Image (tube, rainbow, N blue to C red):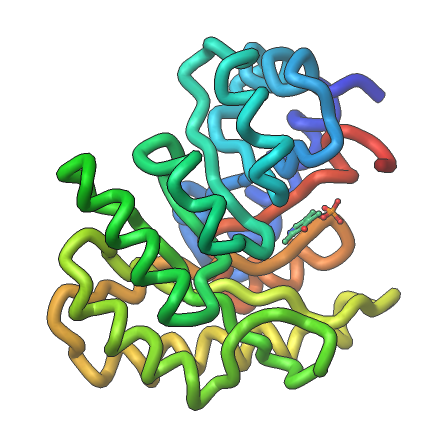
Length: 227
Ligand SMILES: *Cc1c(COP(=O)(O)O)cnc(C)c1O
């Protein structure tokens, strides 16, 4: 399958999952995960109607920022080192993977130099697995509070990456857990914080994630093929 027909298929599945869950399909956005893919694939996807692209590695994102001249919206979805933040300041629309205050502080500093505000999500390790990055559930509330004090950061919600399971139903409780945590944080009414985004769901489990409230699904393999 080519990129265009894969996108058509995925968008239909996203729409069907949203409707099945009684949700507005327009409330779910597709982040096309283009890691390891050449700029030409991104351009092709863009011309098939896809506007949002997620990258994991800054060293891979940087050349693409210049190679892709189309007006794509870039998201950072992978683990981010603080010393890389300055290279992407002002150039990405959303960072999904903020998991510690030192990183948030550096984002605030770099966006602040430009007089801009960076939208971020707090990444939560909802499964509690040692190998996964993200804050603990308790740590997430604290981190959101600390981020709320930074003038050039705007917290928009939460992101998670559950452990890999063959059965998406096994991932579902983690998606539900992230939604519940988001509701708990929203109930704290922290000034400047809007818990409106839930970034969860990948190629193998995005339909379950949408049923549990995902607003951003991060899909790579089903669009671009195996990496
Ligand atoms: C690679 C990646 C994805 C996409 O995974 P697929 O299974 O290829 O859809 C989503 N989120 C993150 C954080 C990733 O690193």
